[in-house]
Structures are given as C-alpha cells and as structure tokens.
Length: 599
Image (cartoon, rainbow, N blue to C red):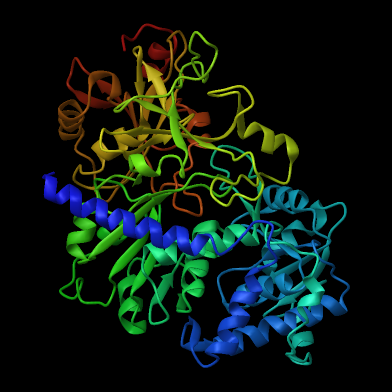
C-alpha cells in the first residue's frame, strides 16, 4: 500500500469512527432511553414512512407503532410487569416485531426462542428463560404440542396467527384492543441498561445459554452500524436471517430502524430468490451471516446477477475464498465485515473492503476499542503466563484468543459486558488479573490473528482448532483450502480421536454435487495443505448441519468418529502410500484402532 493510499485510508477511517462514536454517545447505560421511543419518534415524525415490508404487505411506522400499542395494552391487562419475562416462539413475520416491541413498551423482557429447537432442547431453553407466559406462532403449533407433556410447570400459552390446542388466541384478543400508546410512566422504572431481550447462543458446542441484551446495547449497535454504513431514511435493509438471533433481530432491525429506513423481511432465506427480492423491493443494503454468501455464489449464474440497487452488504462470517467471487459476480460495491458475539463486548469492523479481515483497530483507537489477542495453548486449552504471572499478548502474525477489556465504570458505553442470565455462565466468560491485578476481560472463545497493519483475521473457534503431529490445525483454514475443489458444495472440518495417538486427526465432512474423484482430491489436498493439516479422513454427507447463523455444527460429528459401524455415510482414509483416498471398511478401521495401520 502506497503512502497516499494509507493517508486516504486513515482519513476515511477517522471519519467513519468519529461518525459511529458520535452516534453511540447519545445513549448512556444509566439513561432512560429505551427502544420503543425510537419507533415512537419515527411514528410521530414520519408516520407515513414505510417501516416494514413483508411479502406483499407494507407497514408504516405509524402502523407498526399501533400494532405494538395493542400488544402493550394486552400486556397491561394481563398483568405483565416491568422486567417480567415473556418467551416468544415464532418464525419471521411482522407479528414477531409487534410482540417484542409491545412488550418493551411496558418494560417487559422478551426471551427469543430458537424456532428450530424441539422437545428436550426446547424445554431446556424455555426453562432457562424462566418465563411465566409464552407467545407461540401458529406455524409452530406442532413443535409446541410435542413439548406439552415434557414440561413440569408449563407457561401460560398465547397463540398468534391461528388456533393452537390448549392456547389462548392472542390474535383474536388484539382485534378488540385500542391502539392507544401507553404512557412512558408504565416503563419509568426501566433504564437503558436493563434487558429488552434474552438471546440464546447458537449452541454449536453445547446447550445454548441465555445472554442478557439491553436497550442500550440494541440502540448503540444499531446507531453504530447505521453510521458506519451511512444509512438514512431512504435505505432499505433486506433481512432473511432469523429474528430470534442477534444478526437478524438486532443488527438488521436496529440498524435500519435507527436510521428511519425500511426493513424488508423474509420468512426464511432462499438463495434462489434472494436477489430477486432485492430487485423487487429496491433493497440498498442487506445483512448476511455465516455461509449465506457461499450459498448465493453456488446458485446458477444469470445475466441479471449484477442488476440491483444494493450498494452495501453488512455481516460476519464471509470466508476469504468466497469474498472476491461474491463481490465480483453480484457487483456489490462495498462489504462491511464485522466480528462480535451475542454476549460479548468485542466489536471489530472492516470498513476497507480488506478481503478476509474481520476488522482493524488503528493505533490511535486502541485505547477506545480495547481488544487484544493473548496466547492460547490449544492442546491444554490454557493461557500461557509470563514470568510475572500475567497473560502474554500475541505479536503480529501470532494466533491467540480475542479478549475485550471490561470497563471499571458502569457508565461507559464501549466495552460493556452484560453477561448471561446465569451467574456461573457469566463468570466463565470473564478472565481476571490478565495484564494487571484487578483487571477483567471478556473471553471470546475465538482464535484470531492480527497483521502488522492492525487487521484482524478469524482463525477458528476454540475447541475446533486441534493438534495433530505436534502442530496446531485450524479447521477454518483447512475448510478454505478444500472449498475450491470441483464439486464440493460445503465443507465441515473437525478433529477425531484415534486410540494410541496424540491429539486428534483431521476429518472433513464434504457435501458434493457429484461423485468425488478421490485421486484428484488427494492431489488437491497434497498441493494446498501442509502435511499435518491434510485431513486423514473424508466423510461424504448429503448436507451439513448448521446453526441459525449458518455456522457448522461439529459436536455430533466429532462424537460419531470414524467407525463405519456407527457412521452410515461413506468414509475415506487418506493413504499416502497409494497417494489417494481409499474407502474405509471394517477391516481397515480395526487396523487403525489396533495400531496396525501406520498413519
């Protein structure tokens, strides 16, 4: 990068950060501003402006506010008090937004329940939420009915959108309720730092935990990203991500509504109709997560791929092997990749279109955005200590766990850590006495690296990175190397234990659109990966299991291992003597298990 390019970059960076910090500092953790006031403000200021589009129906800010007012009136009549928790189990549709916004108008907390959960997992989430009432969308009636006998003390159930056996009809009740805005005095006891949501972690590595998500965090996240993306009331944000997760329910909704623009909501993500929807509704920005962009690139090319009004894509998890092709094919002028977590206090953002980077913190901003990487031993899953007993910060190019400083003062906006509903879970997320006695840092559980220019890059999730042949292997980097192989549609890489060996051997679950050429695959692996990083096993899958943000689930695959008696998918072993992948049968498995096969 030339000197002039660096100067231009810094000028743009300073202007963007200044804009974002100015927007964020309007909201104080100890203040009284809550999310409903933002919608109410637009409803009063621009009542006819379109706030929401769903299918073929548009809703103005006045209509959204009125729908939420009806929910608030029902909540008051039902005796729902400020800070009381109400669970919401509903797929993407306008009523989802009306429900939590109306509950927030009376100071209640909405526990956003993952609509993919069933039976024991659903019961666990509802128990963790601790709500005495639940609003269930009629489309999930079957899921609720399956659960009824498994909850010892079931909550009071209200159905919306259609009848559910054993539930009261909320939709019918709301028809007769006046759309009068409740007095702000109803929620006078609520401060900005109080939760508006309980949002559950994705559960890719265990049972999901309920993270506390405050009005303040909703407002500051929305204001910051609206400023970074330079959004205004003329913008239209397309959201096909689930509203019960932070990416869709907070970043997409908060960002566009803080700007006074229009949310274009989709029931579920569809790669084939994604850009058709964007064209139809005049979308200018969309929210992505995980592998969404890969799925779009895998659709058949069409002449009108670059014909749309989208000027910016905002999200996280865009892999560097997908980024250039996605941006080129669909002619996306700017991609804003960011890094964060539902319960975390770390915010990194890449405003430079730097392929593969999740963000950059310039030297002059490091005191404001206190994010550091500390050394982490993936074999022992511990943090090495310096002779003085404190943690060791990584240098440029070194991989370490990302941590974010938790401010000493409760009135500081940047770096606040709100934790989980469970005290033990909250404490597990904090490192203490890191660089000095008494300091506290949020631990992300993610491995990142930083280059000399200050750009951060996601490496892997702790627990996904494994050690083999004395070397650390990042599953994410192996997946990036395998993805370009012809016919591969999706890749999920993880480590499996082999009796009598140290560490874990690499295994790649591949989803392919045609029969795989094992000889060519062997050559591709050999030519693109270091010897210790080459997968020892390949498992052919019909599909890859993903979380709501399209992150790959690995726990069950790791548990399956490589025993062909337990795994019904075809498994292949990398055979370096034959220079190919050979089908793993029971005899070969026993040779490996008994240590008779050299690996």
